[in-house]
Length: 262
Ligand code: DGL
Image 1 (tube, rainbow, N blue to C red):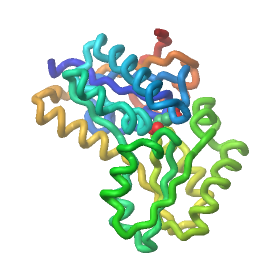
Image 2 (tube, rainbow, N blue to C red; image 1 turned 135 degrees about the vertical axis):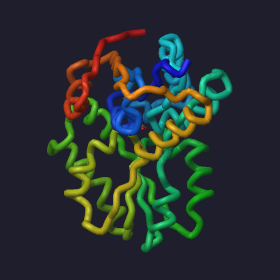
Image 3 (tube, rainbow, N blue to C red; image 1 turned 90 degrees about the vertical axis):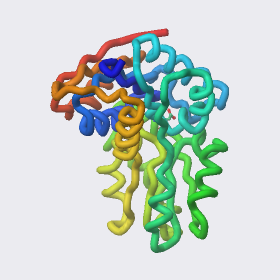
């Protein structure tokens, strides 16, 4: 059982930012990554549809024999993880905007969150922000349009910069000193964000924390692989394989990419 792969899914290429953290922390683990790019963005879809797609992705990974599933998507986590945990025996690791550390360290007591509409409107997100942000002003900003641009490989283009400027300006004006990235696609925008934000504004994303939590749960369940050899890294996309490869071009280990469709 412990030789089986870790399954990871996202609405598209964004979750590769989480995969990179997992691979860095546990290079010996084999992984199967599923990018449902054909259905991106999830953030504009109804809760029902997000649940339906998350179930499909989960079943694909379970059929491939995954021992644990990482929902590498804030939108799918906040809308569907409770149901997935109820329905399947395998353990799930999710990702949510890291409000807690930002709220803890903010000096201006004003924190910005950039996330999808689906994440910001979910009840799981509302309860997290209420529980972790006493006395802190949370400024929520929907990142409408960013995921489709990133899915096209548009990172440092004029269009992306124009959208980001529009989204960041009001938060900066209100005095944020932390910007929480609530979507796994957004870490790819960090170079542009750094260019656009004042120097004192810190950017927080949860990728490394998710990798650590994945390792802790595998350890707890006796599922950690016991070898020094690198794992096998497989990637499936139901859209453009070349775009997915672009997001993996900085990876210093061999990866296998393939097309799939439901
Ligand atoms: N990577 C997904 C997330 O973390 C993007 C959601 C979308 O497809 O809109 O929320």
